Length: 182
Image (tube, rainbow, N blue to C red; front, side):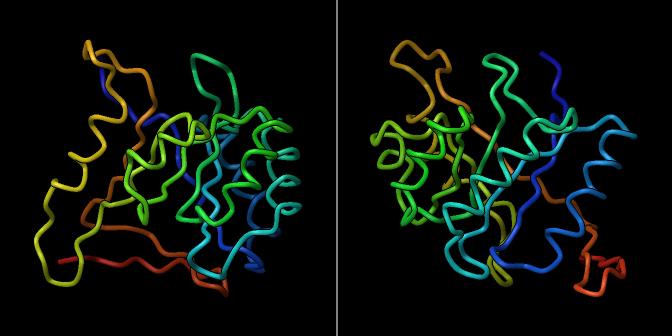
Protein backbone atom coordinates (compact mmCIF):
# COMPACT_ATOMS: atom_id res chain seq x y z
CA UNK A 1 0.00 0.00 0.00
CA UNK A 2 1.35 3.40 -0.98
CA UNK A 3 1.40 6.12 1.69
CA UNK A 4 0.04 9.54 0.93
CA UNK A 5 -1.54 12.56 2.55
CA UNK A 6 -5.33 12.20 2.47
CA UNK A 7 -6.29 15.58 3.87
CA UNK A 8 -5.43 18.48 6.11
CA UNK A 9 -6.94 19.28 9.50
CA UNK A 10 -8.45 22.71 9.97
CA UNK A 11 -7.69 23.11 13.68
CA UNK A 12 -10.00 25.87 14.89
CA UNK A 13 -10.41 27.55 18.27
CA UNK A 14 -13.88 28.47 19.53
CA UNK A 15 -14.87 32.10 18.97
CA UNK A 16 -11.74 32.82 16.89
CA UNK A 17 -12.64 35.73 14.63
CA UNK A 18 -10.62 34.29 11.74
CA UNK A 19 -12.75 31.15 11.40
CA UNK A 20 -15.70 32.71 9.61
CA UNK A 21 -13.56 34.68 7.18
CA UNK A 22 -11.01 31.98 6.42
CA UNK A 23 -13.19 28.89 5.96
CA UNK A 24 -14.63 29.97 2.59
CA UNK A 25 -11.13 30.89 1.39
CA UNK A 26 -9.60 27.61 2.57
CA UNK A 27 -12.31 25.50 0.94
CA UNK A 28 -12.10 27.46 -2.31
CA UNK A 29 -8.34 26.88 -2.47
CA UNK A 30 -8.79 23.19 -1.60
CA UNK A 31 -11.32 22.77 -4.43
CA UNK A 32 -9.04 24.54 -6.92
CA UNK A 33 -5.94 22.56 -5.94
CA UNK A 34 -7.69 19.25 -5.44
CA UNK A 35 -7.04 18.50 -1.79
CA UNK A 36 -9.39 17.79 1.13
CA UNK A 37 -9.94 19.47 4.51
CA UNK A 38 -11.58 18.31 7.72
CA UNK A 39 -12.40 20.02 10.98
CA UNK A 40 -10.50 19.60 14.22
CA UNK A 41 -12.33 21.54 16.91
CA UNK A 42 -9.74 22.89 19.36
CA UNK A 43 -11.14 22.80 22.88
CA UNK A 44 -7.83 23.82 24.49
CA UNK A 45 -7.23 27.21 22.84
CA UNK A 46 -10.29 29.38 23.62
CA UNK A 47 -12.35 27.00 25.72
CA UNK A 48 -15.17 24.61 25.05
CA UNK A 49 -16.93 24.79 21.70
CA UNK A 50 -20.68 25.29 21.90
CA UNK A 51 -22.80 22.41 20.69
CA UNK A 52 -24.66 24.69 18.26
CA UNK A 53 -21.49 26.13 16.72
CA UNK A 54 -19.99 22.67 16.08
CA UNK A 55 -23.23 21.31 14.66
CA UNK A 56 -23.67 24.28 12.31
CA UNK A 57 -20.11 24.13 10.94
CA UNK A 58 -20.32 20.41 10.25
CA UNK A 59 -23.77 20.67 8.66
CA UNK A 60 -22.71 23.55 6.39
CA UNK A 61 -19.18 22.56 5.35
CA UNK A 62 -19.34 18.75 5.23
CA UNK A 63 -21.41 19.10 2.03
CA UNK A 64 -18.54 20.89 0.27
CA UNK A 65 -16.74 18.71 -2.32
CA UNK A 66 -13.42 19.62 -0.66
CA UNK A 67 -14.52 18.27 2.73
CA UNK A 68 -12.75 15.00 3.54
CA UNK A 69 -14.91 11.88 3.87
CA UNK A 70 -13.92 8.50 5.17
CA UNK A 71 -13.19 6.28 2.15
CA UNK A 72 -15.04 3.26 3.53
CA UNK A 73 -18.20 4.84 4.96
CA UNK A 74 -18.31 8.12 2.99
CA UNK A 75 -19.01 9.93 6.26
CA UNK A 76 -17.47 13.37 6.93
CA UNK A 77 -14.36 13.12 9.11
CA UNK A 78 -14.42 15.28 12.23
CA UNK A 79 -11.83 15.53 14.97
CA UNK A 80 -10.95 17.52 18.06
CA UNK A 81 -7.96 18.73 19.93
CA UNK A 82 -8.90 17.76 23.47
CA UNK A 83 -12.47 18.34 24.65
CA UNK A 84 -13.55 15.08 26.31
CA UNK A 85 -15.63 17.27 28.62
CA UNK A 86 -18.00 17.70 25.64
CA UNK A 87 -18.46 13.94 25.19
CA UNK A 88 -22.25 14.16 25.65
CA UNK A 89 -22.45 16.82 22.93
CA UNK A 90 -20.53 14.57 20.54
CA UNK A 91 -23.02 11.74 20.96
CA UNK A 92 -25.78 14.06 19.70
CA UNK A 93 -23.57 15.65 17.02
CA UNK A 94 -22.67 12.22 15.62
CA UNK A 95 -26.34 11.24 15.49
CA UNK A 96 -27.33 14.44 13.67
CA UNK A 97 -24.42 14.67 11.21
CA UNK A 98 -23.45 11.01 10.76
CA UNK A 99 -19.83 12.15 11.08
CA UNK A 100 -16.87 9.81 11.32
CA UNK A 101 -15.57 10.96 14.71
CA UNK A 102 -11.85 10.60 15.43
CA UNK A 103 -11.02 12.77 18.47
CA UNK A 104 -7.67 13.66 19.95
CA UNK A 105 -8.40 13.32 23.64
CA UNK A 106 -4.83 12.85 24.81
CA UNK A 107 -5.80 13.86 28.34
CA UNK A 108 -7.39 10.40 28.50
CA UNK A 109 -5.79 7.09 27.68
CA UNK A 110 -6.55 5.68 24.23
CA UNK A 111 -8.13 2.63 25.88
CA UNK A 112 -10.50 4.84 27.89
CA UNK A 113 -11.55 6.86 24.84
CA UNK A 114 -12.23 3.74 22.79
CA UNK A 115 -14.07 1.96 25.60
CA UNK A 116 -16.88 4.55 25.48
CA UNK A 117 -18.01 3.40 22.03
CA UNK A 118 -18.28 6.97 20.74
CA UNK A 119 -15.06 7.36 18.74
CA UNK A 120 -14.58 5.75 15.33
CA UNK A 121 -10.84 6.01 15.86
CA UNK A 122 -8.14 8.13 17.46
CA UNK A 123 -6.13 11.15 16.40
CA UNK A 124 -2.62 11.60 17.81
CA UNK A 125 -1.61 15.27 17.68
CA UNK A 126 1.68 14.41 19.42
CA UNK A 127 4.02 15.52 16.60
CA UNK A 128 6.06 18.21 18.33
CA UNK A 129 8.76 17.96 20.95
CA UNK A 130 8.10 19.30 24.41
CA UNK A 131 10.58 22.10 24.99
CA UNK A 132 14.11 21.01 24.19
CA UNK A 133 13.41 17.28 24.67
CA UNK A 134 13.92 14.85 21.80
CA UNK A 135 10.83 13.30 20.28
CA UNK A 136 10.03 9.78 21.40
CA UNK A 137 7.39 7.42 20.08
CA UNK A 138 6.32 5.75 23.33
CA UNK A 139 3.06 7.73 23.48
CA UNK A 140 2.10 6.41 20.05
CA UNK A 141 2.63 2.82 21.22
CA UNK A 142 -0.31 3.28 23.62
CA UNK A 143 -2.60 3.59 20.61
CA UNK A 144 -1.76 0.22 19.04
CA UNK A 145 -3.96 -2.03 21.22
CA UNK A 146 -6.91 0.28 20.60
CA UNK A 147 -6.96 0.01 16.84
CA UNK A 148 -5.89 -3.56 16.28
CA UNK A 149 -8.21 -6.48 16.86
CA UNK A 150 -7.04 -9.65 18.59
CA UNK A 151 -6.12 -11.26 15.26
CA UNK A 152 -4.09 -8.19 14.24
CA UNK A 153 -6.45 -6.65 11.68
CA UNK A 154 -7.13 -2.93 11.82
CA UNK A 155 -10.65 -2.15 12.94
CA UNK A 156 -10.48 1.51 13.95
CA UNK A 157 -9.07 4.61 12.27
CA UNK A 158 -5.81 6.10 13.50
CA UNK A 159 -4.78 9.56 12.38
CA UNK A 160 -1.37 10.98 13.08
CA UNK A 161 -0.13 14.51 12.81
CA UNK A 162 3.05 15.37 10.97
CA UNK A 163 5.42 18.26 11.27
CA UNK A 164 8.43 19.03 9.14
CA UNK A 165 11.29 21.39 9.75
CA UNK A 166 9.36 24.35 8.34
CA UNK A 167 5.76 25.34 8.80
CA UNK A 168 3.47 28.25 7.98
CA UNK A 169 1.75 30.29 10.65
CA UNK A 170 -1.20 32.53 9.80
CA UNK A 171 -1.25 35.54 12.10
CA UNK A 172 -4.47 37.14 13.25
CA UNK A 173 -3.89 39.99 10.78
CA UNK A 174 -3.66 37.38 7.99
CA UNK A 175 0.00 38.02 7.16
CA UNK A 176 1.90 34.87 6.32
CA UNK A 177 5.10 34.37 8.25
CA UNK A 178 7.60 31.67 7.43
CA UNK A 179 8.98 30.09 10.55
CA UNK A 180 12.13 28.02 10.28
CA UNK A 181 12.83 25.47 12.96
CA UNK A 182 16.42 24.59 13.66
